[in-house]
Amino acid sequence: MRNSLQTRNNYDLFDVFDDFFKPMFFEEGKDLKTDIRETEQGYELDLALPGYGKQDIKISLENGYLTVAAQKEKKENEKYLRREISENVSRSYYVGENVTKEEIKAKYENGILCLSVPKATEKKVKESSFIAIE
Image (cartoon, one colour):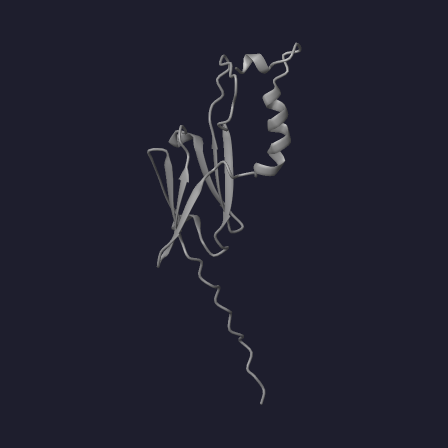
């Protein structure tokens, strides 16, 4: 059926529909599906990364943003008729500026990256060393 929808110039009519609907339905980062649960100690994030190896995933923490990025190796000799699974995905989550990278725990098993993030504690206000005048 797909071959019958091609024009003489090998232009695929499915591309027209994809280009038209993409701005409405595609949001950056949404291809990295995430479940987030709140616990008493913090938050548990489960990120779906099927087909990625542990070595393909990078997790960083900068200015209070936890960023998960995954990149698969490109295979040069493969020819795809349609490509919907991303080779590169990333998504950022604001966890607070008081959370340190040592406090975040990560585990990858069966295509699911599990992150444990503690709740951010408020910074203590420094007490003034000045004496108030009455």
